[in-house]
Amino acid sequence: PYTTLFRSQGLAVLRQFEVLGIRVVNSVAGIMAARDKGYTAQLLAAAGVPTPTTFSPSGKLNRCLLERCLGSRLVAKRTASTRGEGVLLCDQIGTFEELLMMTAESRRQSPILAQQYIATSKGVDMRVIVVGGHVVGCFRRQARSGDWKANVSLGGELIHQPHVSSEIESLAVDATRALGLDYCGVDLLFAEQGFVVNELNAACDFDGTAQASGNKVNV
Image (cartoon, rainbow, N blue to C red):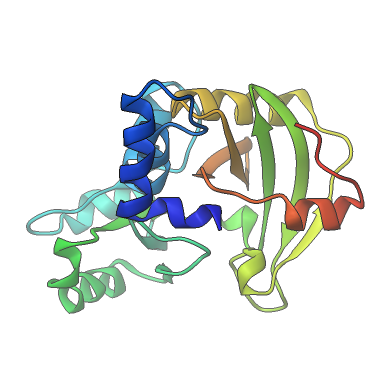
């Protein structure tokens, strides 16, 4: 499966292709940028693409700063989390602080980020498929009852969105370009003032999107 290219061996093969001048989709740099949620947030912010405020705590936690910027409720996520795993909703700063202490050893390999919780997008988001600078598919992801994460791998439902607004298209394409990707899945959250880009998946497949729309995805 294509997702195996996220592993170091697969990336090494891609790097060799690049050294030999063979065209790859996506580039190693793009894949690595999307894989690191903290770096993704940095690149999106630098490109002016709206994204939830994100912190990468180190040393003594500044609880006052965190609460002032993120609020008392926040999302904790591993920098390399996938499929909704390694992502937790903390109801208060103290819970996040306890999580950091409990994971002190493992955080050396995979740091934990503190991210703004977008309450208006609880249990729902948008997955936009971008290929070559064009949107080729758009789907609303709805979480199963009682869950706050809309990942299909966690039981969420894909609902085809045949009409894509100019706002959604512009955000998805800009986010893809910010990370230097040829194709990806862009996850948008429903914020109060419009959409914000949450994450990018540089190894998304088309099986679920084709099934949800009833059509093949033309690329």
